[in-house]
Image (cartoon, rainbow, N blue to C red; front, side, top):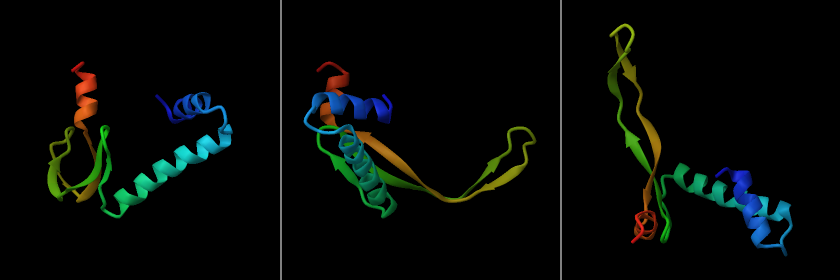
Length: 93
């Protein structure tokens, strides 16, 4: 599902809202999740899952073509862990 498909479904389910308002709501939700992760916070949506940030330390890697050692810088990566309710629905429990 793409963001535009999500907006369209929400607009159809809520005919009392204008499409531009639904787009603004979806954009605001994604922006707030992004801001929280940027600040190092965790975002938990009960029954769905939790977004957090995992830190990867700097390390030495290898160029697969040449075998040459390459330094890989430390970085932060977004991480999503599914909630129990979502896992249960996916596994038909």
